[in-house]
Image (cartoon, rainbow, N blue to C red; front, side):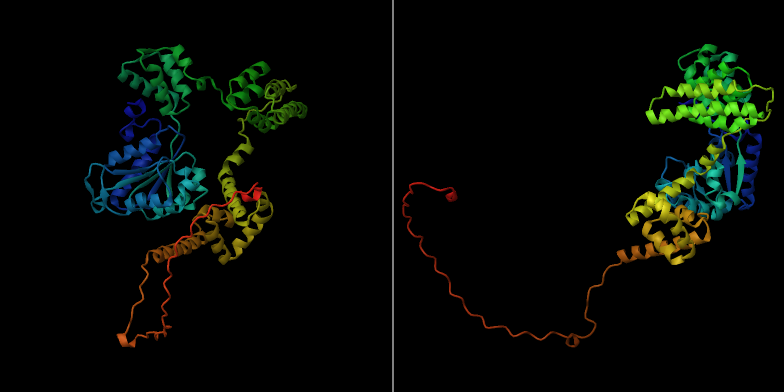
Length: 496
């Protein structure tokens, strides 16, 4: 059995590194004992591997609740969530062992939607409106597990305002090391203390990754040494961008900065964005700033040559200019002591990822419907359509029906939330039309029947028939005797 499953915590007290989050989650669960609380759903947010799913399962086990779980591998369209989660949240149900759960007697079923921030596209069609309804109307406890709360809160004001948010933090390396020591002892594997420290630090706060790394080293071995831990994986040697920025701007060692770049798992374009973001703050002297940007501009020239010529050897020149060149640009002792900054461009692009995807989806549907290019729609048609849709309710309804728009896509055109009143009203009418069409298609067609007595039925008068004249029967003629044809002297081409 995989060690991550074998040693998964079974109780909330066994979840490491997040006592405050665990206590808050337990208090919310106990509030269900006195009826339906004000916050019917809770959102567990944090980085992968910090214990969010484990805490939800441990909570259900501790409270004696059944559990219904839907994760990213399941079909999570609106109809699927409605069938599983909505029905499970409103009615009495059965536990995993087959016992009957009566909600009036305090028996509950915990509904868990894992990776809820990844609801998007055709695979999860219509998911968010159903999730919003689940949060508002559920009669059973609901837990949404997300890695990025911003990604889901910007799609739904219900998730943002009507749920209890609990943040799980990354456990410290010392906490991970203690847990790994207990696992190694249970498996009968001896691990050097220094090797254990390396494994714990390389995990970066991901408890699941730390357990898997320990298992990969201990498989078939009786002892894990420091050398084995240092050769664990390429990730152990990777440096993050904050280390690289520190080496460039604050260590006064240009050669070391170039070495750190070679151990950083990022492309030169991303490194250039980081240098560009931090350069004005790290070089407060104008002369240093000018020289730094000169080197950075030279790196950008090399990057342009890479794109034009597809000659990636220029990457090394660009990297040298961004590290060695920028580091040698400082001529004064004026320095900054602030924290290194994450590139604002990457932040904006990350936050607008879903918006850009929605925009592309709407543009494609309009282009197909209008038989034109996506570029023409994006430049000329889309701005006008947004104005018309916002001011004409009938056009809004017909356009949504004909193009097959999703709630998120209509909300994009309206600059509104997917659960806003305008969007709900449109899809309420569309759903009513779809139901009418379904009923009409299933309705049997009545056969025409007489409603009165037989003599009251109008019978068409008989049409006078023409007299039938007997046709003479043709007499078969005897075949004429074959006569031998005289062969012609020469046959022409037309004879064939």
